[in-house]
Image (cartoon, rainbow, N blue to C red; front, side, top):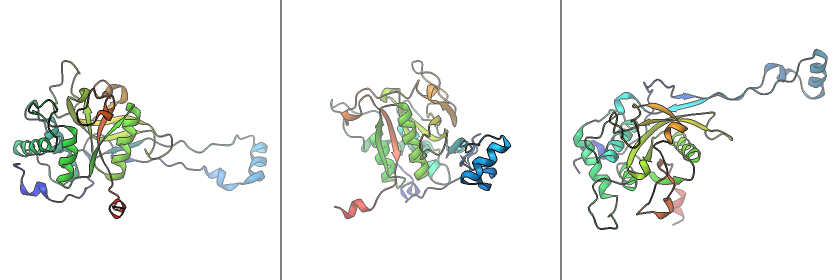
Length: 269
């Protein structure tokens, strides 16, 4: 496939401090005010009434930020069809130390993804690669496992992506333009830890391999590492229209998600 020998080596997620202007991780935990620890039960109620001080609620959780990317991770696609190969290249750069931005590696990754994409049902030769090939290629290279998933709303899709990144430390792939293009999601901003009840993702940190060219139909390419609000993201990350390989994903927001493999599954076979 033209891949350097080290690209097929087993990968281990490596955490690095990003140099994008976003803190990698800021977790706000609920804290109880000092006054509430001094009193209990009826004693607290009586003292508050006497002092004329209203009871204070627990402090609201702080915003939560998470980002896996650095400027060195970004790679532009070398032609109009290699968005999957370029996205794989960026995702591998985020997962392992030492960024590889060469055209030869991108071409090899594109060929690998195409080999795992399956044939077109109309018999025509596939020019690009599919998200199925993206997920399979990353998994074959030891950067996974990855899977293709769908969500019915953009809010649900972003929460799925945030939880996947939070639990694995690996980036997410996004299928944009109704299935015609691929982006990388390297981080997010949320109202709280995404595993907490009621948490909402407020922004997605993305990399578009077509940057800075953009699209006359879909709009500008976000700058590498730019945080997009869900409204901004939703102009290009829209439900897929038509799926040859999986009709169940029609009209869904499509993601390529990392996940933690459960070895108990093998013991049940």
